[in-house]
Image (cartoon, rainbow, N blue to C red):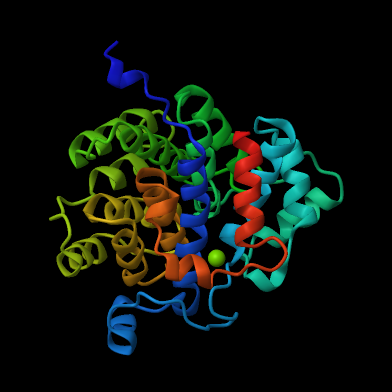
Length: 317
Ligand SMILES: [Mg+2]
């Protein structure tokens, strides 16, 4: 093994980057959730500032709310305990954050005592992927555990192979982004996608095909990347149409800011695609690469920005 391969991929800087990157993308996308790419561009031009939507500017939604539950579970146990996570999903459930429709049924079942591995619905929504980036950063040095933890946390709510494959792909991509960032290496898009395809193939063939459809994207050209990604993907609430464009936005970007702005500009499930691209960008470029203007604007009451940073510090302590 060369010395370069021994650099640990896991660090406070990357875990906190994944966490705050998720929150930044979530909050940036919140006001335009469900809009088309064209409508966003016509109304706001380049949407690169946090605006008020159905929640005040800088507010996060269900994506970050459930990610924080994952961080709290890691902080309490030093590992992902799915039963503990399922009960945290219930105790921190806050409908005003805007959850997907089928999650109410899952929360009710869990609250009534159904075990974590029997409460989920046969859904291929992107809910298992939207929150998982921090697990990818936490287990970045152990791909086998990363994969099993990503699947377990997904199974609590989403049990369809497409939902599971999307969560696994996003977690693996964040782990790989951490490893590349730690080595100071640029991601080679073809190799990055090939590695994901290799791991996701045994979980779900359709998702594998959708990952292989990520187009070759010129780095740093937002307009071209937006055009290519929106022609290929529905960018909706399904895992196979949301995870690949988020990965594409990361691979096409020159900076964390650009990855997140590009992801939100695709339209559709903007808060979630933004959150996933944000987790990837924060994993790769680290916490310090996230724009200060966004971090300052992020919700910071209760379980907000500083609470999340403190959780990451304790997890890594
Ligand atoms: Mg959301």
